[in-house]
Image (cartoon, rainbow, N blue to C red; front, side, top):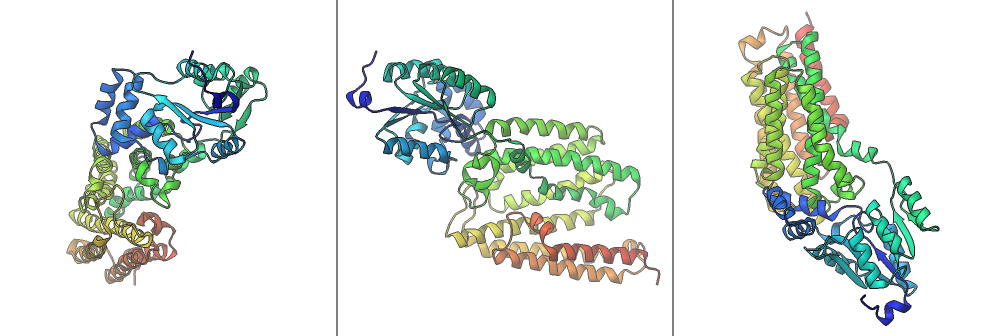
Length: 483
């Protein structure tokens, strides 16, 4: 047995676990998604590493995508316990199953630990392995252990005292039976609110675009509306799957953003394992609803998902291409709505959608660049833009929005369209309202008052809501008024 040094013998020892204890996350998943966001081949490389054992997998992923220690979601209560322990003269060791390169980087960043021990690429320092190591290092009962997992029961058996962090009632009772007087930190909270927030139901408003083909074709029969409702549900579930996937891939860059760092996955409110499980679950639920619709809708939904994954893995880092992808994702909702209701969208509708949504995509980037200017950041994390691109992006947003208005004007002058309305001149007023709205969206973004997503902003903005209502009223009046 390795002998304890003199300082260890006289100083009380606190051993702290990393995953789920010191940090409200898991470094294995953190490093996987960090690496995956940089290289789409990461899953294959991870499988190759796993062939040599879990410790080798952790070492490979840590080399490919170690998370930034400065941005991790640390448990403030645990940090305070460590500071108090050190202030009282105790020794604190970080002992974790995470890879040693990650553990060392975190310890160096926090500067709170006297010792660091972790998995080394060969030995996975977890469960019985960790228990045996700590018994040899500090002696049986010679340390207090702070952990969070069932696998830590083997360690608590060797410890002189126990601390738990965020454990369930069942595990808490087991620890109390083993170590009476155990200290319990950070009682667990329901993850349901965090999960619902991560699914971003407010973003489902975008999926109302599914009903655009019905509106443009003046087809409001019950069958079409029923099909549209099913399509809306299917698209919303699949979109939530995409949002979770994107948040997993962007977790590192999100933590550098003043607002996105509060997202459930980035903040640690939602465990990465839960987020990972919900990605395929929501996708499967969306496909289930899609199977009740025409096959063309399922094809449109598959194209949407494929483009979104391509956007998350690659396109979002390519300036201008990313805006084209965003515009395409909006337009695909229109295409999917037409497929669901067996309506072929007109060329006019597709052209209008492409330009309008390109404008909104550019406004989204414009808002992000303005935010960067205000924060003094020169380059967007995880994006291909610099603050010097702001004038060009603003011009793209304005020009594309104005072209969308022009397309609508040309469409309204078509003979076939004129016969659909009793008072087509009212529609020109709708064009003016749209022109005002597009201009105002660009202006609001330029002043730094825009949310990260212009569609979400529009859904909450009174002026935008009045503009949309006025445009709808003008179209209805042009159709139904008899004078």
